[in-house]
Image (cartoon, rainbow, N blue to C red; front, side):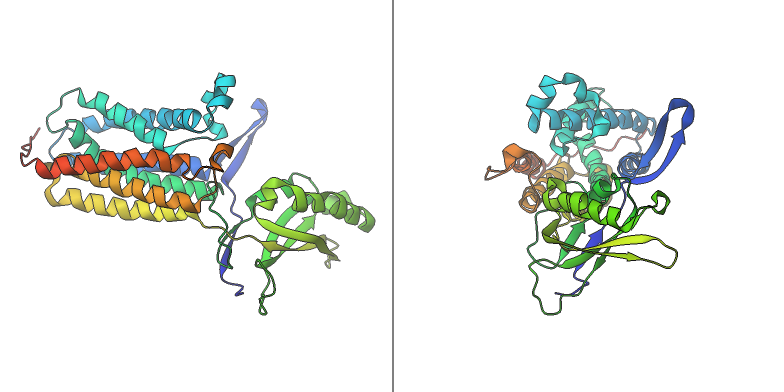
Length: 370
């Protein structure tokens, strides 16, 4: 196996944290939240550009932005609640509002956006009927979707299945987080080990764990901790076992020149498909295609054409990528098609119907300048 054939991903989901002593809490900025917000900010600026080119009131962009933000958050949250974990949330309804704990579904967001834009279109603005509004918004949804999937990658969530090869991504973050919670280690690093003879079923790696020097551990204390606690984590913790294949617990204990102790643990990495990155890349390409489609005729584009292509392409890809992902909830494990795939099928059908309508509808809505 080549030592360069897989990627070790140990990125933190947090950008920085600022302690707030008088509130006895910490303000944390996370990559997911930043990218989520950035998606809406960029989309708003692009929408200003599109409305200006089509001669529509740019003030309507602000109204549309509010509709979109509210619909996306509420729809995505309720989609997760009702599609994936209804029993949990119906038993504890207050947890529904705890969006910061995670749990958003893109299919729910799609339904929320469809409903919100229907409400928006009832304002009967010239050149902004339901299909025309959808045509413009889905271009921006594709871009925002790409940024959200990058956020999922930073969170090491929505991971792919094992590649069963020496390629893919080794998601190390859950191992780092669990080991650091012991308050024994101050740093966790990972290194690849060449397997030139190809004798291992998975790529071999070493985990370098730096002991907290301030605790003045004795060597016997450190060995007992490694054998009794770290070995238990690596061999039996479910979150860790998703990412490493640990047989016998093998480690070395070394000390550097300044007296700092390190545990060097030998194990095997389990590379997985970076499904989040596949979806992010697809969304970027879809955004480019849809924006090009709009730019050809702008306000004279057949109503529903862009929306139809978006629905067919995006949800067909989502259906395909689900084969590479781990089940998000337990009830999906024995299903031939998971919930994401079942929800994608009607989305594709809707897209096909809209495309047929768009191509058969020869009547064009004239441009209206304001």
